Amino acid sequence: MLARCGTAVVLMVVLAACCPEPPPPAPVIDLAAEEQAIRALSAGWLEAAKARDGAAIDALMRSDATTIFDGQVLVGLPAIQANREKEWAEAPMGALEWTTTGVVVAASGDLAVERGSWTETEADDGEVETGEYVTVWSKVDGQWKVLIDAGTELENEDETGDVD
Image (cartoon, rainbow, N blue to C red; front, side, top):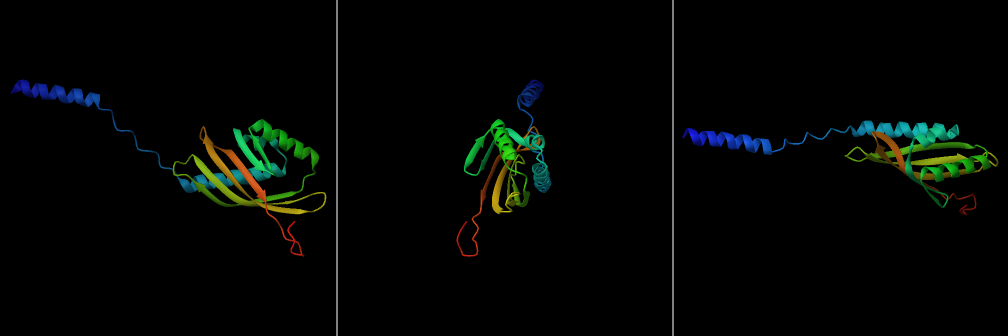
């Protein structure tokens, strides 16, 4: 009997050693806090754009970011930077505003989609353009970065009912 008990104890010890511990519980993601973080980053991005602070804008982008605006798809930070510098050199700074109308954060807490509207008033002729945008954010080393930023200008009707 004693031998059987000893064998059972040894068997339990061996089995316990072979069984891995259960994984720790997944961290709880505060989705509301993540949403507020995206909203704050977007507001900071707007201020950087108004100040034409390319370095601050670049800090928000992933190296493999993609932008889609004005019929152009730009892939990678160097292409985005070159396009921005060209646009800034060719056009005086008008008035730019955007408003985040919604943010959805994935339950995993590492991907978010921001949606909003924008208005730009051209400095040279006062023309007002309006549009909508979608920005996809992803976490890189714990920091939110822009993965994809896309927008479109909305068509405006003039006084005659014609679409601009």
